[in-house]
Amino acid sequence: MILYLVSGWAATGAVWKPVLKNLTDKLDIEPVDWREAINGELDRRIAENTERCIVAGWSMGGQIALRAAELNPGKIAGLFLASSMCCLVERGGKPGVSRDVPEKIKVMLERNRKVYLRAFFAECLCPAKDTCVIADLLEESDSITMESLMSGLEYMTHTDAGLTPDIPLMMVHGRDDRVIPPECSEYIMRNTSLSRGAYIENAGHLLPLIKPEIVGDLLNELIEYSIAL
Image 1 (cartoon, rainbow, N blue to C red):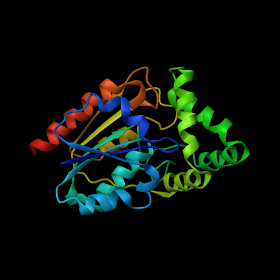
Image 2: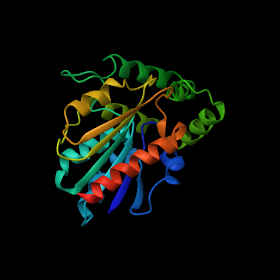
Image 3: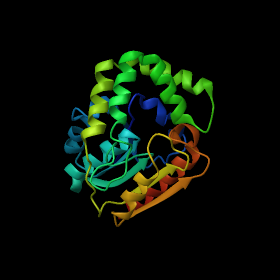
Image 4: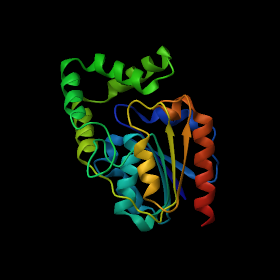
């Protein structure tokens, strides 16, 4: 069985690195960059894999994971969503950010990309204040083109990932998340039958970086449960 780890908008797969050392060795682990995933790479890998797989995603990566499960329900053994959502903006009774947020992000990116991303990563990290982590994220983001950032923003804004109730699902969300409201995880759990979740106190959006042990333990729990089914 393969575990796909999907990264989130404006970041790279490095976000998952602190979690890797805490994961079971029972699965093969393959990173999937969000830029490739929104262009069909994750669905291609799932389709080509002869076994069922587990998909874990952080932030936008979780939205991508939900969409993959919707499109490939028989191939997904479990889902792990960290700081994630069905849709970025509130829509049709689903919680999210205000509808004007994506346009504001677009304007700020076009005005000064580096200034906006530095502020964005600081917001992701809150309530922690580690300037070294912010600097590392900012440096890694240099590899992401403006076109990709805009495409990712469009994906998050207009994708409304459906829910597949009979797939085991684990949610983890920081209580102090200032990027994706915790209500997004609550909505998903209310509407799926095989889900459970954990809310981390004094933690913001960047859970794989700031709480890797907790994230790793919960992901291992999902893996064990999914393998046993």
